[in-house]
Length: 172
Image (cartoon, rainbow, N blue to C red; front, side):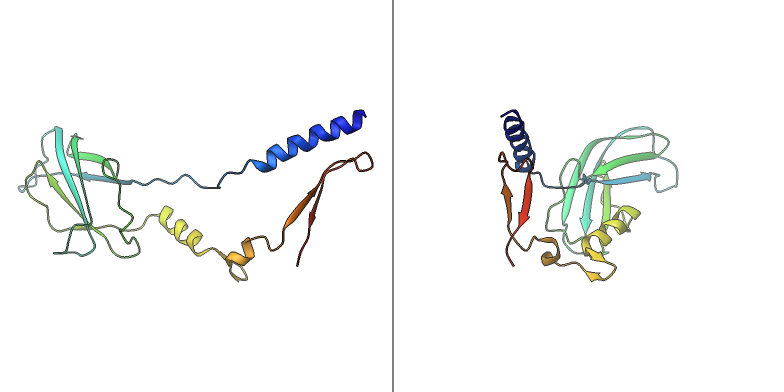
């Protein structure tokens, strides 16, 4: 009787563990770190202080339509340097095609959009993400059929004659 109670207890624990599922995801950032150093038309650094900065994203180096706009109202500048997290105020829309070239512009204190546009380039983090997106193995591309279980699983419960938990895969 004692082994049956222990067996039932273990089954309940296992069922509780197996029934709890969670999607496996890696924490990824949805912002872009952007840093720069501001100078005026004469080449002198701008004065230290807080500035309003508007950022615009385009998919062409000139002309075109803005794909995304964000205004960061208080950006601290010291010795001409600033650092912002693009997308922290206005998230990037899902319609942006990150597989094509993207160009960034800035407008500081409503002084007009700066030119030329800055071409965004990849970082090591993006190279790794590109490899993960391909989902390949040494023998070729992994398909959904390679990942999905091809047959149902049945669980046999404990009995007095069988003091263990057994997973049987059945089907074709």
